[in-house]
Amino acid sequence: MSPDIEELLRGHSAKPVELIRQLCLGLAQVRSLDLDIEPAQPDLVAAARESELPLEQIGPLYSRLLAAEQRQRGGVHYTPPEVTARLAAATLVDTPGTRICDPAMGCGAFLLAALRQLEQRKLPLDGLHGMDADPDAVELARLTLWLASDGRLELDRLRRQLRVGDSLLEPVREAFDVILGNPPYVENKRIDKAYKQALADSGYTCLRGLWDLSVPFVERCSQLLRPGGVMGLVLPNKLATRDFGEPLRRLLTERHQLLELTDVSELDLFGGAHVYPILAVVRRERPAADHRVTIQPAGGVSPIRPRQAQLARTPKTIWTLSRGVELVHAVLDRVGQQARSLGEDLGRRVYRPLGFKWASMLDHVCPEPTPGAYRFIGCGSLAPLEIRWDRGLTLQRRSFERAWLTRPASASDKQWSVFGRPQLLVRELARELTAAVDLAGEYAHLTGIYGYVDLEPDFPVDYLAGLLNSDLLRGFYDRLFWNTHLNGGYLDFKGSYLALLPIVPAPRKTRERIRELALELGRADSAAGWSELNQAVNPLYGLPPDWRSDA
Image (tube, rainbow, N blue to C red; front, side, top):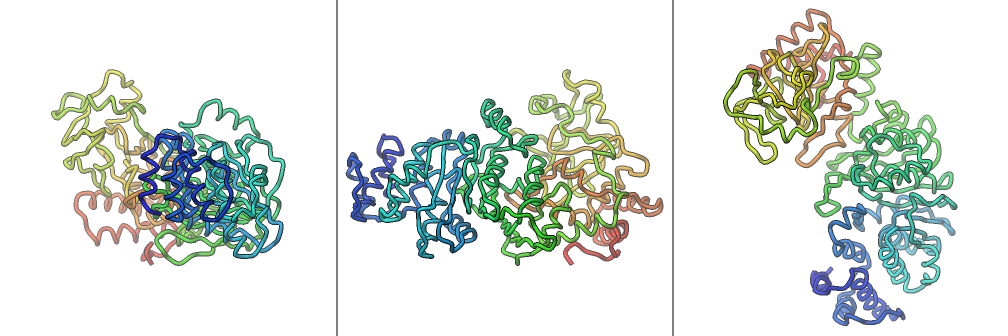
């Protein structure tokens, strides 16, 4: 698209939909189609006519003209043509009369891709349906499909089949062969309370915890599909792992065939927006015992085809979109019932120990020690088996180096008593699972660290730190939660995720040696020491001593 058109659009003060109408008028003139729109901005009409603006750019142009606040409120991210084309090609069948629907169509990007596929296959175009709550977007979707069909799809038909409305609240009255779509990206805290309650009262079965709008959207897509129908969706990758997505994952994994799961979260599909998507192609049909899913991991590696039953057996039905998922199941099968869960049935998990208004506590961080103060650390202070207090850290744009946390008046005895005792410390954000030990109770933290206290004698903190920093448990976590990765290759180490790591006991001699190695490696890094640590841990999980996660 010529950048001059967007520049021209921004030079006008009319509503975005009125400006895009003018472009559509110019495109209609190129196609010798009669569009009953007054040429209010002749420069825009002429620009569209001369540049032959691709119809795939209508939606992105409209999105960029919307105010940022309006885009955020509606969770609007228009899907790139290469994605809509891919999902349309993967879901459509060469059957006349195929009924296709996008329940949150915006300006019709998916329906346009479906129309292109239907034309290539010489199939009728009259089975396209859609709905959106934005009446301006719906109007532009109608105009886009009318133009793309060179007027063969009559506007009267498009007005009946592309409707203004909220598909999440309207009752399901018809079924479709194909569903295409990209859910609104609105997290739980941004959903209007009345709207949230209306959704909760609408009979959805998968709303749990801090669900976002992608959950009812996908459940509604399933309800709109006829038995045997196929949906092709863009989904946030957090649906594959987060606790709030577990009921939906179970619904899809147990009652649908997962055909394709493609991790495209490393690609900037939405122009800098913090959205990490996966592409899912799913058939509404119960999977056979030997049904296999085609999974395309990120990074351009070869696809894998595990049995869907394997995904169903993964803890919390997590969709593992990485190679080597067999390790997860092999380890869980071998450790069986002896495995313990950090923070659940083993010790107490501590996160933001002085409360979630931790930023106000930074005023109690000082450069000199005072009676009762603890050395202040954060996420960046932790290295494998080592606390780097000298390193310094930045929180809320404030820098702290060799700092101390004094007790705020608002901290209760129970909160403050977390410090001053042995504690296992795990980084919340890191490129690999990273744990350290505060044996003497010298340190205090406000955020960015998960702490574990009140552990049992057979599971001392230094033993646990040795397990968590081992090649085996790092590999286990990577395979289970790789699709949570963020910019820069960082992984999210949430307490609920860490609770899924199988923690096993060890014979006393092995346990004591792992403790010794953990303390030695915390004082001085050593390749030989790490090798011995891994050789001590691997047999505890039924693997050969020399097993390596990268083998």
